[in-house]
Amino acid sequence: EGRDVPTEAIRAVLREQTVKRVIQPVLCGSGREHIGIQPLLDAATYYLPNPLDRPPVAGVNPKKKDKEERRKPDPKEPFCALVFKVVAGASNELFYLRIYSGTLRAGKTRPYNPGRGVKELVSKIYHTHADPKDREELPEARAGDIVALIGLKDSVTGDTLCDFDHPILLERIQFAEAVFSRSIEPESSADKDKLAQVLNLLTREDPTFQVRTDPETGQTMMNGMGKLHLEIKQHRMERDFRLKVRVGRPRVSYRETLKKPVSVVGECVRQAGTAGLFAKVRVDFEPIPSEQSIQVQWDAPPEELSPEFLSAAEQGIRGALESGELGYPVMSVRAILRGGEVDQQFSNETAFQAAGADAVRKAMRDNIVLLEPVLRVEVTVPAEFLGPVTADLNAKRGEIQKLHSRGNVSVLEALVPAAKMFDYADEVRSLSQGRASPSLEPHSYRPA
Image (cartoon, rainbow, N blue to C red):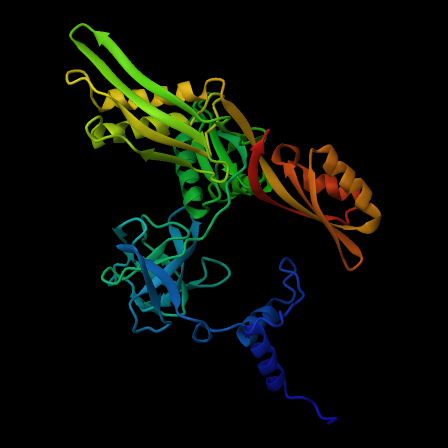
């Protein structure tokens, strides 16, 4: 009609189509240069659905696993929230909370963590700004709020907090497996305890960052999603916690699995004068390629082995599978306890634990496959540099999965062993005069 369309009318139509998922607003800007931040936040307010536009949040009742629970975004509903971020500081930890329903009062409400079976204490509630030190204290927080808490002891990223009398367990945040590792040690032995405390804080803050002690070398190993991830953790230790540390070269986290199914008898038969130990367990082991975890099942006649002895044998099996034939953790294996033998005088739980570990050693002897982590790599590259980038991925034992065009650039998808990808971001830039951009994520484990 030749007249200006009112801004409100444009926003209303954009919002309606965004909520229906017909369109997807795209905004430009730079976080580092502080360009376009305000329009982005305004757009979230204008176009994204508020909780009333969405169905009530769903979870399960932790006491009755198959019963679904729902919570409307209403302050009068039972309390329910998700811990989506933990920030570790030198003096305390800040827990960021997204409240789905109900009301939380500082010092008065004791929220329940159903995933860990503990009640937490909330000493303070804050509204925070970009700088975590810039915050305002609140007496309470209600449905729809995003707040930060101080005082939680056992909760970590991804945990649910709820009303004790109306428990609900929200869907956990799924984290990928860490595939890169580096050794870390303090520059002076006086900082050993402080390093252990800081590493513990950082693992609580970030579930994709893990710390373990290598049983072979005694080294402390930090595991993460990539080289950059571990470098950021190192810089935080040095900058925020004033720790001087030494780190080793990046290493790949290999795994082991069984080559073929096998049935074994694990034994612990020791005689020392009038004392001794006796236990025998029959165990079937089999590889389960589709599953990354370890499964231990019981299928033994009750007259042969008591639940206490079966539980001890399971502990022994799980413990031994943490370090296989070559010293790497074992994965994708199912162990089924079929039965065993007991001596009334010499059998105890220690003996059955040792017998379980012996069964693992026998099953894995000359029967292992070494697995290496494989990354899914997506490279967006101008067509003229596609040849060198493809040749480089092939040289790294990469498996090209897909190649398609997006405008005037090519998008290459491939699976590549993690061991070859430590400095890939730098390498692909030099191959493409800085014009290719890669993204990498853990995909699976495959035979090395």
